[in-house]
Length: 267
Image (tube, rainbow, N blue to C red; front, side, top):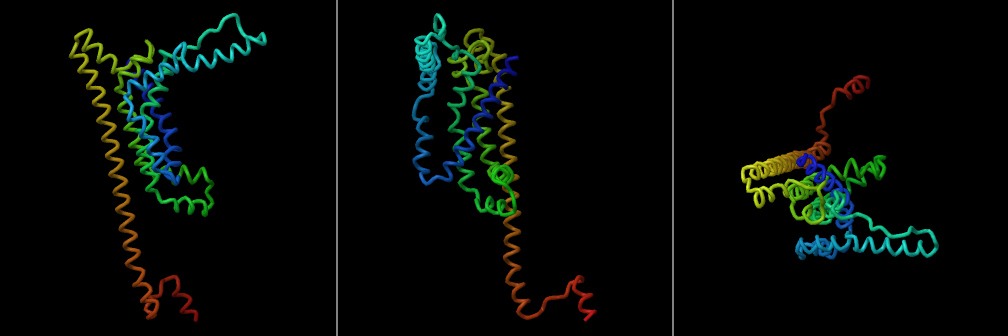
């Protein structure tokens, strides 16, 4: 049950993070102010993670920023006779949603940077060629751009999935009983129960999942590198044969093909 809960929170957080990071990385790569945007992305790394989590606790708490905004609008409705007898704070803290939200915020830079690097190296003339061949803008994005930056997307998946899967502080501080994860179980087994063998077994699960993810990333990078080598060899062969073809055309040494032979006989 805890493993499935951990997997669910990790998968949802990772997918939402990638969906947000893709347009951010694309906008950064196409922007003229890349340095400024990179600094804005890296700035959260300069702050301790606990401070950032406590900042979210002040935002999501019963007396936090969000509930203060809702309380303000409730007072306006109450002044016009539409509000209830008493304002009831919304429950944002100690839920799965809070864990997913804070996890996305914590690890979003880890997804933006590799996607930005991959998009920055992408040849955008391929998009123009796809548009010239009749593809719509969404089709060129999904069939040309995303496969072209696959390595960056895979790296972003690994850099977000692995740390979220083994996180401890986020569910401990903003999560509740329904968001207890493997990292919390490991700490409890070591510090409270003193059941080190069970803690080691849970740690082995996290290690195995991390190793599978890393091997998948390495295999993807190897496939992409082999495809690039093949395309480079083809381009080199084409460039080598072009001068020879031009020389033969000038000398008239082109050998007739079978398709052209009947025409010559008819003449």
